[in-house]
Image (cartoon, rainbow, N blue to C red; front, side):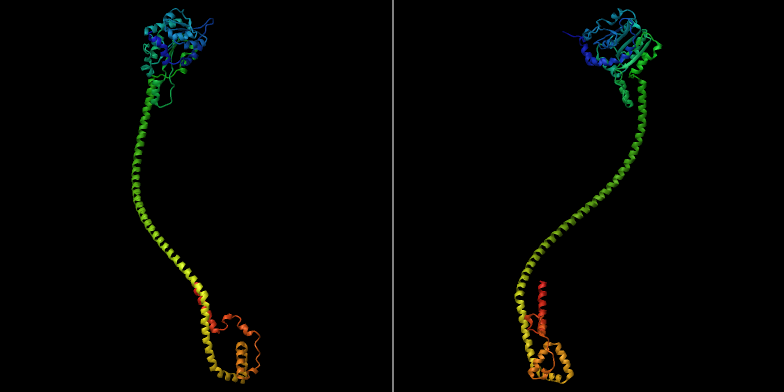
Amino acid sequence: MKKNFDDLYKAFEDRFRGSRELVKGRLEIYQPLLAQVPRQPEGPTLAIDLGCGRGEWLEILTEAGLEAVGVDLNGGMAQEAIERGLRIELRDAIEYLREQPDETAAVISAFHMVEHVPTDYLIELLNECRRVLAEDGLLILETPNPENISVGTHTFYLDPTHKSPLPPSLLEFLVEQVGFPEIAILRLNGSPMIEAGPTERSVHLMFEVARDYSCLARKRDDPARELKSLAAFVQTASQQMPADVEQIKGWLHFADDEIAKNSETVKGVISSTTDQLRELTESLATQLELIRAGHIALTDTVASLGRAVAERDAEVARLRRNLADAGATTTKQLAERDAEIARLNASVTRRAPMWVLGWLRSKAAGVKRAADNAKHLFRPFATQAMLFVVKHPRLRTHAIRWLKANPALLAHARLFAASRGLGVASMKISAPPPGSLSAGLAGIDPSLRGLSAHGRRIHAQLKRAVDMKRQSL
């Protein structure tokens, strides 16, 4: 079965106009006007929706307490409204209105319907609406807004059943000409204005604001209801006019002025920045030269330090070798010294005393022989001397005092006098105290008592020499 566009129109509306819920949400803006509609004191208050489609507005009218009737030629579109229990007349709008009595409807509305009909049909439709509306009745005609550039040049033509765009001023003129005294244009269903720069605001206004508009009219203009007038409602609910050329020109002029001022500011900044860049470039060039000179000096210093380090490393290596050699030599010398010390210790310990004693004994024997020879030579003189001393009392007194001070010599004198038969023995000389001779020899090493005093001195000198030699080793 072949389909025409009427068969496809419901699917078209679902895609391009929006879902039932979205459309119904947009229509809520008219609720304040419905609240102002006078109700019949007796019986229902009639509201007629021309081109009712899926019935979103019929539901709102019913919820507002009005008796809503929808009129549409497209049964496919109206089927959804019928299934929801809404009252639908599948007829031509003018034919249906012609059958209605004068001043019987409180509200007559047409949402996105007037752009589908020729101009003459629209004028006749407006005449019938004025006749059927009650004295205080409300007319609502909503249609795409060609003031919005996107709508006027693009989206309006998505629907091939559209005849031609109706600018707000044109529809307002037609409504006025059929006799409606109170008229107002409500712009709606677009994005709200944004806070932005002049250019962006201008573009947003022309392409995004007020995609639709509604021509609102009342059959009678009552000055007493000024606060409830259509103009008062529009002032609070309407969006800005997309084709507000004066507003856009003002924004753009302001933008031009700002650009000019900013341009001068930018020029000054550029000039100042250029000077700063030039100074900075010169400063950087100077610093670069300093850095290059410093780099060269640093390179030379590093090279010099490298050479110094190499020389130091060579010197350290040489010193290490010398130290190793010296250590080896010292170790060898210490070993040899230790061996020599050991040998000398052994040799001196065993032989030095015997050698020294032998030498001393040989010297002592020589001295004894010399002494014996001296005795034979000097004995006659000693005898005469002793006799002379004995005969002279004063000399004898001094001799006795001196001999008492030398006990060993006193003993020898007694022996000598006795051997010669001299009278010295009769001299009153007290004998030396017991042990005086042995006391004089008490501090002498027994092995050296056979030596004379001179021999013992020689022995002491030799002993000191041997001790010093040991210490030097």
